[in-house]
Each structure stands twice: as structure tokens, then as C-alpha cells.
Image (cartoon, rainbow, N blue to C red; front, side, top):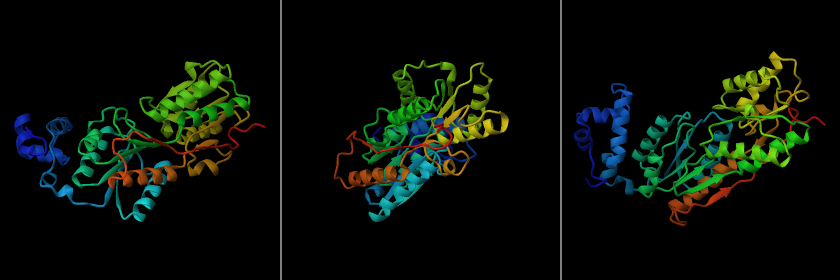
Length: 341
């Protein structure tokens, strides 16, 4: 079966289902079960299905539209990145279509299909926390749709990536906590199949090793870095017989909720008894008391750099298979939550 000519009727025959069910599944109808939708989407990807508007050649017309997939529009880093993307896109005459995955793989797949169906000329994406399979993203590359990843990127897909040096940033945070006198430093880590959380964890480990401090696995709290996780992490750490003298969270959200929990539910002073640092420099980090030490990721600059790269690929000015990694500088911002001197 030749890719590009597959229809919903082909998928229906392949799965022994009727065409109306296939159509509803591809359009995410509530009348179709989640299990059936998954079967249909998998078969569609395997068979190389393209919607009729694509097969008819409409995609060859320039849409002047860039598709963007982010985990959370509400997160400061991603909203800042989107601001940078839109600034560049507007200047270059492109529209922006924004989707959010809510850190959910299935929703990310639906977003990818939607962008494909709408004939975007290029895609900017930061993958969901739950994403471990990347066929829906590889499809853009297979169809020669320029794709640039920023912040979080999938392994194995040839593409440009726009990032900060998460390893170095995490190292600097941990080193700062050590230099402030902390010897037992806990770490709130996100899922380490994602590059950002793996690199932040490795930076934390390396700083401990360089200062001859042992890594205590009991002080590493693996979670999704949501607000509730910060509370649970703080509760867990305070329950230990030998509680830590500092917490380094791989994002601000969990760090802030841990900080509030400790302030309300213990007699520990911050930073005197326990220092806290986060990652991302969200707006609330500078207005709480004490202010939260964190890393400024330069979200807007990452968005600008990613958009510029993508547009040069769309215009054919660079190789779309180049695996260049563009590294944007980050900055450690030291505030009262960790500064003891």
C-alpha cells in the first residue's frame, strides 16, 4: 500500500471496523472508546494515512503558519518562550498555532495530528513528560516538515535543539548551596527519561562529588514536580531521622510549595535551618518572602532562537536534518531562600 494514498476505508479494512468508526476515532469523538482510538491512531501511523486535504496536495500551498506544541501554556517558561516565538514569527510574516499537551502523551499525539492536518509549514515542540514514543514527531521529519525542539527534546530524531546547559545550571545551584554551608542536599527530580531532568540530576550529582559529599539516594525525591509533589517531598524529607539542610528542586513549582509547607508546618527557618532553591525564575519567586533562589532559563530568548532556526529551515537556508544544538545562556539568581551570609 503506497503511503500518501491511504484512506479511512483502508484503515477500516485493516482493523475490520467500519469507516464511520475510523472517522470518529481520528476526530477524537466521545462516541469511540479510548482503546479503539489508540488502535486506529496506531494503524493510521503504520499505514501512512494522511487526511484527504493532504493527499489532494493542498499541503504544497504555503500556509505561512508555524505549529507550536508545549506542555503548559500557563507555566512561565513556556509562556515566555511562546512570546519570543510570536515576536519572531510576526516579524517574518508567519502566524502561530499553539497547542498544549498538559504533559500527556495522548494529547500530544492529537496535537501533532491537528498541526499536520492544518498544513503548518514547520513545528516547534517541547515534549510532554509522559512521552516515551516519538513516532508522531518523527512523522514530521519523514514528511520533510521542518521541526525544531526546545527545552525538552526526543532522543533519536535528527533535528535542531534549542536548550540551556541544564547540567551546568544545576551544578551551579548545588555548588551555591554547598558554599552556603549545606552538606546534606536533597533533590526533587522530574522523570529522568527527559533530557532536562536527567541533566539537572547529573549536575547535582557532580557538584556533590566535586566537593567530596556523598550522594544519599534517600534524599532524591522522584516526582512530576507539581505543587502537590512539593508538599509530599517536604513531608517525606522532614520525616527522616537525618533531614537535609537544603533542597534543590528541578522546578520552581515544587520548590515553592515545599517552602510554604515548611513555613506553615514546622519550626524550621529558611534559610537558617533549611535552604531552598528552584529552577525557572517564575514571577512568584521574587515576590514571596524570602525570595526563592532559582535559575533564569531565558525562555523568551529560547523561543526567539527556536523560531529563527525554524524559519531558516522552512526557507531552505539550512539543512533540516542538521542536529545542531543551540545553547542559550542561563543565570543563577541568588535570593533569600538560600543565602546565609
